[in-house]
Image (cartoon, rainbow, N blue to C red):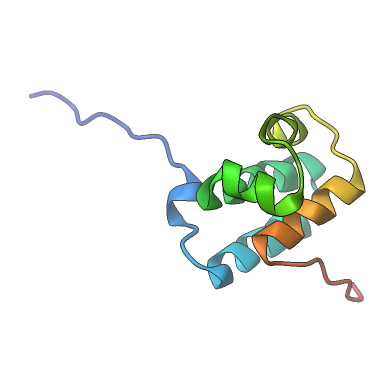
Length: 95
């Protein structure tokens, strides 16, 4: 009997509405790990469509891919533009 193949989990497949996206990004930011947050932001952008997010943020598609790729260090204003394009914003709260 053969074993079933494992399928890689892709969070982008489950980010289907604004509430899920906001919760996912909030939890990723709360993890206090910039790499984790950047990975989450990339997953959300993929869920929404990289081309659509690039256009809405005013970034070129290639620039968006470069800004969100592993190991990249996007500027804060780039992150803000992507968040705005995704219809979410960061909120500062006391710890």
